[in-house]
Each structure stands twice: as C-alpha cells, then as structure tokens.
Image (cartoon, rainbow, N blue to C red; front, side):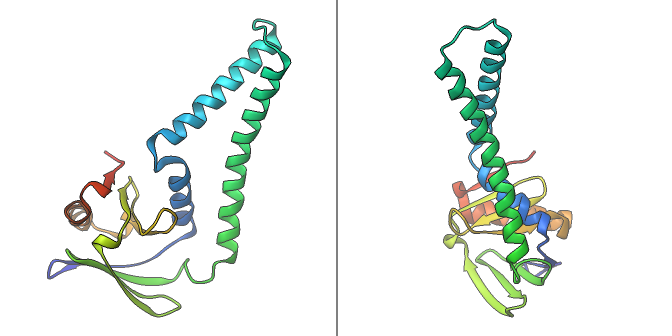
Length: 178
C-alpha cells in the first residue's frame, strides 16, 4: 500500500525466501562465481572422462587432482544445503512471523515480529542492494540482508521501491533481472 510516498508492506519471510537469499549470496552475488564453479566442474569432468576412455594421456596426479576438484565442488553445494537446513531448523524469530516494512526516500522501517521491534535503517547504512526476479535483497554487511519479496508487492510498489533504491543506493544497487 502506498501512502504519502511511503510503501507499506505486511508480510512474513518464508523458509524458501531465506534459502533463495543464501544461495544468491554464495553463488550469484558475484557474477563470476557460478561460472567459475561450472567451468571448473566441466573441465575436471572432461579430463577425467578423457583419461578413463584412453583418449587423453595424463599423469596420475592430474587425474586425482581433477577428482578432488569435483569432490570439493560437490561438497560446497552439500555444505550450503546443510547449513541452510540448520538455520531453518534452529531459528525461532525470523521465519513465518508477520512484520511491517515501511519504505520511503530516507529509510526503511521494520515493525513487529516476535521481538516486537521497531527499527529504522537509513539508506547509507546498507552495504549493497540487489533486485532479482523475485526479491529485493538489501545487505547491511556481506552476510546479513533484508529480504523484500516481490510477491508481497503490487506492480506500482515494485516500481517505486526500485526507484527509491536506485536513487538512494546509487552504484551499490544492482539489478539482476530483466
């Protein structure tokens, strides 16, 4: 709802929202990260298949090096999933609790929740901001972020939020969707 150039949103963060934030932070916040993982994985796989089929001659230590690379890439994905599940299982104040977010040209204000807090964050306190297809992600540091799901917004609120973030965060706001 938009009143007096303020966007008022009432929603709760769901577990899938947190999972999307965590995966974005690890794999997509830096554009090159996921490409590096995929490139290394494919390169290692091709080398291993080449050696196994006899078409590529390489020393044993190369082969084992590529096996270890694939193992570590798979391990990164498994550890990420396990960490997300652990947070979701243990967090009692972040998920499925209704809060109100009030966005204006000067700040974002957050009200409610189990802790019944009333917090204000001026735009210059944010480290980075991103817009994805489904979310606005506002980082206060490299690990913590506020999630604003677009599904909780009207089209007009999405446009106005994007405008406010661009104006106030400048180069620290990045659009990652078309």
